[in-house]
Length: 85
Length: 411
Image 1 (tube, rainbow over the protein chains, first blue to last red):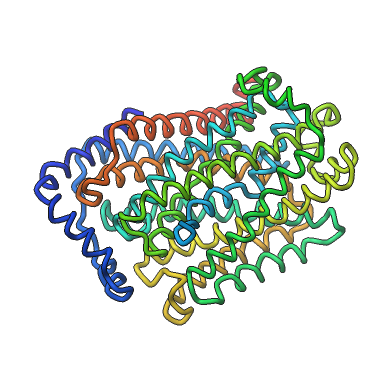
Image 2 (image 1 turned 30 degrees about the horizontal axis):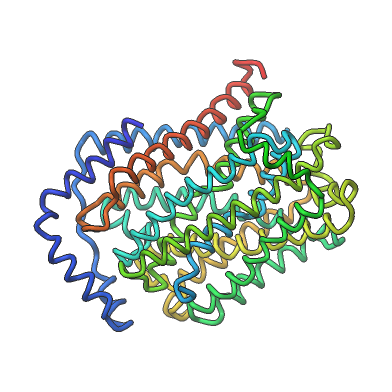
């Protein structure tokens, strides 16, 4: 839970400082997108979004969660196979 | 409103799939109405919180979940997410074919018919070449999920008992591990990784924009309410077997729930439940195959829309059919443990879900993507609570069952 909370807060905080300045621009982009033709819309979505910067703690938390989930998944699979016999 | 109805209802009713309905009926057959009647609507309330985020992120960013995780957090996390999804989808699709097979067995039809029906539906629904038509066909089929409500009425339940069970009592007794299995599989029957991929991908494919978010919320809420009602219907139908199912949940695997219901509540109840299982499996095959296709094509970075032709989006359509085909082959293996596969498919989905949910909450909080549509603090509190609850239940079952299997603890 701590890891998840930290990762979420990190995503929130790391982006919020620079994004506050972009909000009027984003509102304009929202309005623009709503008036695009289908082909223009598809072309707009083909543009990749920029990479987010995750802190070391958030990355470590995500890896810890990933490893934990893989371990529990292996336990479930092992139990399932054992039950088949 | 009619134009915007779709992804939310499809995700929720698609999740009322074969293994889910079998899990609900198994809950009812094993423990009766108490605890699980209010637990199912509570889980769908949790599902609403998660799915609303998916719809909102899809509408604001116009991108699918896999694509966004890959671009925003890097290819490692994107491919992990796609890998989780493919694994759980494959196991779940096997369970969907099992569901169709169990339903058709009631009408003395074999597994070959179940496989053919599932595969023909996958090809038929996307052959129209438009997302809109695909969605309307699947939506029309999904409404037959209401058959479980009809089954519940046909078993003539005691209305007073249903009403009094809303106080979460009596808490289920018996084996701790079986209870954990049923709770974990019930959670996996309500919130799963494929729903996240599907609803965000479908919202983007449908062309939703921030202006449509209010209607998207209605769509998701209606889906959650309908799915909760139909899910409770399956539970009530299963509960009719409570006093007759001394053999426990595995005991129903051979004859199947429809056959067992026929003996207890008459052939009409058995027939309706069997048709419900066919419908639940068929709809889920379509939505889960679609979510796999969205994920595969998004991660590879090629066309991923029902609005493109098979020539333009070869990988998208190949993944759609291919994953269904692999699952179909598995159920043709004689002597496969049907109910065990169905319940464990849900458990696996529950175990893998927290990672998908964490990224979902991160995306929904990302002001760089979402601007003013980012999560509020209250949504984060609920979202993180859901992740903690799902993670705890999945891990508790996985660890407890494993320790029992290797004889470190007793049952």
